[in-house]
Image (tube, rainbow, N blue to C red):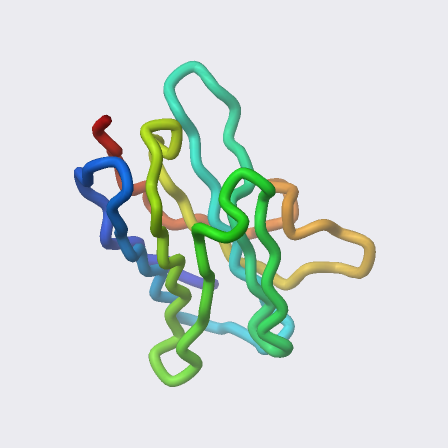
Length: 126
């Protein structure tokens, strides 16, 4: 069992920055991946960014590429999405998820993950 704790949301002006964090505890493995997703009111949950723990390969949705950077601190078992140049359309509840991805399974797919943290609200004012 893996437990995820999310922190770092808040209110920021457009153009500003925020850093979220997702702390994992429990039985984990280097073949795990962490994905960050967001859900705005009335919209489906969408992939934002992801990282594979062992290789540290990173993946981004086109909407955040160049603005968000995802990284992992192995010693702290924590994944950080650094969000910069925030836009009002980035406003959403952000979730992190973790799991051991099977071959052929996309880390962009929410159903690929076994464990989810609680959401944190990110609000970007114009």
